[in-house]
Structure formats: C-alpha cells, structure tokens
Image 1 (cartoon, one colour):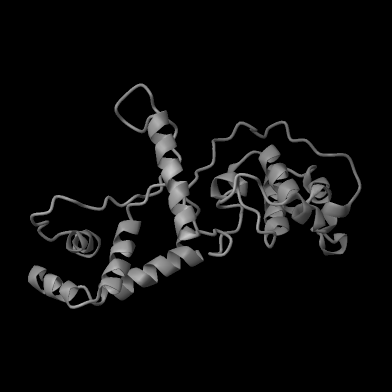
Image 2 (image 1 turned 135 degrees about the horizontal axis):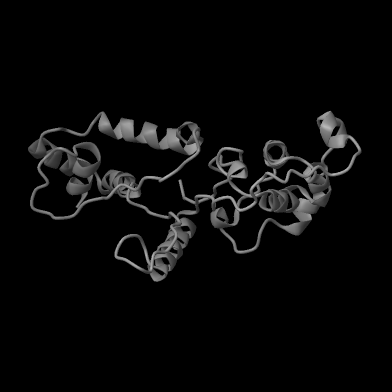
Length: 237
C-alpha cells in the first residue's frame, strides 16, 4: 500500500502495478487567494519537497528504498501520502442525480472528518488560521460578521462596526478578531463556541480604533447590498 501511495503522490506517471488502490487528491472548488501562503500550506509543501528529494523514480529502487526504512519512517510517509485524500469539504447535497453527494453521504463525510480531527488533535488556531476578509469575513453576510465579532470580541465591539458598509465591516472585523482565537463553527473542535467569559473579557480600546469607528452618528444602511450572498466554503487544511 505504501509503495502505491508514494507512487501516486510523487510519481503519478509511473505504472501503477498490481495493487489497484490510489489516493484521490481533493481540491477546493474555491479558496482564498492567500491560502497557499498560509502556515499550514507552507508546511505541507516543505514536507512534500523533503520527501520528494529522496523518493526513487525507478520502481525497483522504490521498493528497496522503502524496505530500507524502519516502520516509524514508513508510517510517517504513509500518513503524508494519505493526507492528500482527506475530504472534509462541505458540498450542497444533490438528491436528484448521481453527481455530487447525498445528504447522508455528506453527514458521514463530516462526521468522519470530525473524528479524524479529534484523533489527531487538530487545532486550527494553533496552526495559524485566522478569520480574514479573504477566507471568511468577506464571503458571508453582515449579520454573520456581527455574530462572529460578538462571539469573539464581545458585544461592545459589535457596536463599533454594526453601522459600517459590508467591506469596511469585514476589514474591521478581521482586525478585531485577529488575536481572539475565534473560529467559525465548522472549524471548531467542540460544539459550543468560544467561552462566553473569554469573549466578554476581551476589551477593545477606542483609542486604537479608526476615527470613523468612534464617531457618533446614525447607522448607515446600504440598500444595494445583497444580504443573500452565497454560503461560504468550508474545508479542513
């Protein structure tokens, strides 16, 4: 299995051999422009290049190379190869055709992804994920932005941005949430959101805010904004 997985990941043009098994790499249908520069993406790329520098291109040499390593090293390589086939993507269920995924299939996929995340101790905050305009805040509606700020930075912070237009609101929300450890629900390990006491204890100093956030005035409404924007994409890194 390891030989086949390594061939799929590093030598995709090679003859597959006798074992009919493969890793089907999962790709995002849409993603933030800076995803490739994230800490997780860089770590995966560096790990892949490190292994790739040693994987023999010749099939016989690959067998010998794998046999020459201990079980721990082989398991590490297997985990790297198999990780490209982990699919924790949310998709809109399609009950009317064989294309796409059914609701049952989606439920099973996400349930298994959650179990895998717990088993591996995945912590999206620890690996460097932060809510930004590009990866979340600019892709959801204004009420969702306000909800995120309320959960992560407290009610007082929401009052500072709830009068803003969508673009300005998303930018300020990114700044307010940067160091709070807040995660969207699909990325959380536990069912409840961040602890209420933590959110309530986060104080936003008005001296550090832009002038337009602290100025008095009526809330500004933009009737041209579309509050029914498309659902944001969800995925595990």
